[in-house]
Image (cartoon, rainbow, N blue to C red):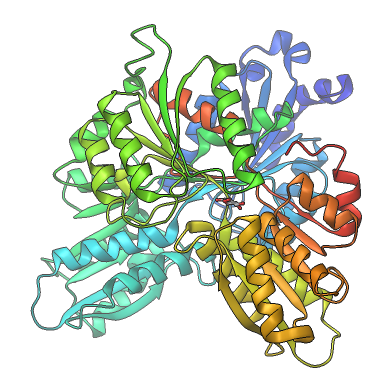
Length: 631
Ligand code: AHR
């Protein structure tokens, strides 16, 4: 909360701001008389430029949301495309005593250090385009690889099979992760079409004018182009101007952003300048909503919120505009019927301590929110989960929630739910389906990052160890999301050093007994040549510990044990020195799930993914954590 001195100083900022190019916004500015009493939190918003319509829209959305909070004041800065200036802006904002920083940036190399520094002192929300690493409170943005891949699929559709189709790709800023991801997704999607060639890729720093200039130059030598994919609509517009300059017609242009403003992508599609665009929601409104929760120290703030991208073409531009108009947000059935919301929850099973805690969290959060919950336990069997989902469809619940036991095989039943008009929220595990509109939101962990964290610890711990490091991996349920992600993330990191070898990767199912039996087998085969056990969850690790002790070896000493979940039982083993490192995967997803359910019923569009914030534990930190552990 702001001190009286700082609050008083706020009134002076408006004046100062005019002198140094900052500008402030909030209810206080509109009602200066009572400002001193009402300002509770001061938020700084740092933008790299305000030339792009997408950034202007982001600020508009921030302002619109701020208007709902009488006690918030926001100071905006615009660095006019100068990264040094943006770093200075952040320092100035800190000097004004902001309570929270919202930053959107183009240049992660220059700006990650200042974001890291700021995060040491106050919460930071990174918006739209990311920084490298994890030194921030919350990231809100889109799945850029997915956007690139959807643009690629669309390009294939537009360029019929035939000979020699040429594409020019216009990218944002060189080296920015957003750019690399959009480009990688685009290239991957095109890989199966030999008749399509990316003839040229140019960087235009997200700027319309630069895109026009660069393309003008390129077209002077290579006027032969069938399609242009620009990483944002501003650059797509610049491209259309360059084409017009060279009197080239018939070229399809695809952009990204879909902002509804003059010269924004939605209007450009409506008036035929672009063939299509993919929305990249700015997240401005969500940033303020989460900022308030963070400042009020609410529990369960996620680490990442990934917003859904929609395709806009001439066919749906009008209806998209109507649907997304602010006034159109209407509560859905259930709220309007004045009856309790009813959800059906098809749980995986009871395989682990984590799972029991997850079930408990969902049931008690539903109860707390007055939401009626129909609960079914599928005993780790996909057929049963499908049967329960069908049952929920027949019972016409408002929302279906499930944790898919494995990733694939859900298309048919999810299509049935969609046809019945029942949204599906994935709690804890993701699915792999051909059409991502078959599910509404995913709330859970980043399993690949969990695997990376486990491996990063190992690589650091054994940095000085000489000779090879032999690892036994105990995998979770075959084809499940956590098993695939944890395996991949771990492998990615250890692959960077040849001394780490996975000597056996054994298929388990997240149960204690599978961990014990598999470790018993591994010990029979490799004896004391095993240096490390990497278990995909705590239950399997605890089972492995029993097997190691049974073989007369000391877990945590003769064999290092690393695991994922951070249940109380595992932290006890860690504190007792029988394990060495545990990556947290929180099962306490109930409150976030119920918030999403209520938001959906209130008529809001849910984020595509809400990724939970999680920590890691060593033998030392486990001792401290044990007293607070809820599961
Ligand atoms: O999907 C999450 C995983 O499922 C947990 O890590 C594991 O313990 C559980 O069974």
